[in-house]
Image 1 (tube, helix red, strand yellow):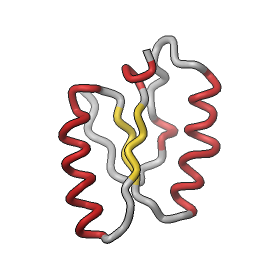
Image 2 (cartoon, one colour):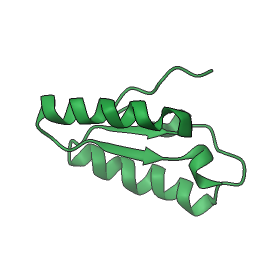
Image 3 (tube, helix red, strand yellow):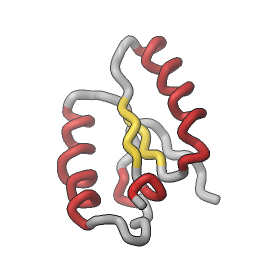
Image 4 (cartoon, one colour):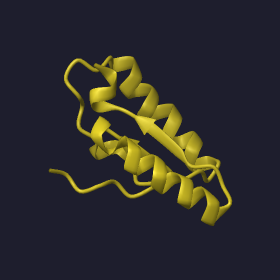
Length: 80
């Protein structure tokens, strides 16, 4: 089991999920992450649907504490 991703961590180590459309992976790496970094929006990539509820709760707390939007990017099993 992989350790949870830090908010704002680069996704270059994100495993490619089986059957994931290549255009989505390219968009995630080349467009979404640089844009979020440029806008200084913290983000988390969620690959496992069972962790979604915990991630949403954490993002809600972080958004309140930081006073900024938090992005949750769905990947992995969400794509199949």
